[in-house]
Amino acid sequence: MNGSKVSNRRLRDAQRAAHLLGGLMLGFYIYLPLIGGPAPQVAESLMQAVVFPLVTATGLLMWQLPRLRKRLRDRASAKASAKEAGAARAPAARS
Figure 1 (cartoon, rainbow, N blue to C red):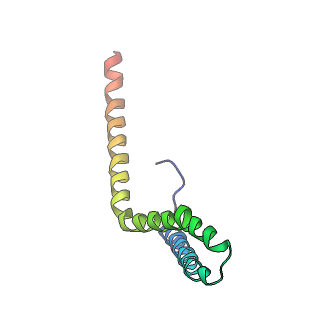
Figure 2 (cartoon, rainbow, N blue to C red):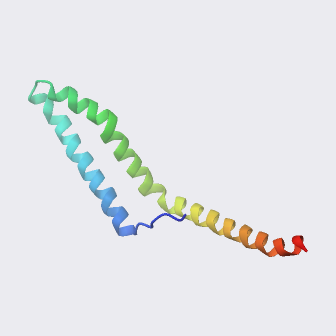
C-alpha cells in the first residue's frame, strides 16, 4: 500500500456526499414522471447506470471498511516480514 492515504474524515465526507447526491437523484427520479416528456427516461437510465451502483458501492464500503483495512494491514505486514526474512538469508546463501 504505497498509495496516498485518505483520512477517515475525508472518506466519510466523500461517502456522505455520494449518498446525499444519490438521495437527491432518487427524489428527482420519483417526481419527474409528474412532469412528463423525455426527462423520466433519462432519469431512469441515470438511476440504473450511475446512482444505484454508486450508493450500493459506498454503502458496502462503509460497512466493510474496517475488515478491508485489517486485511490490507495484515497483508502488508506479512509481506514486510517475508522481505526481511529473505534479506536476512540472502547474504548467507551467497557465501
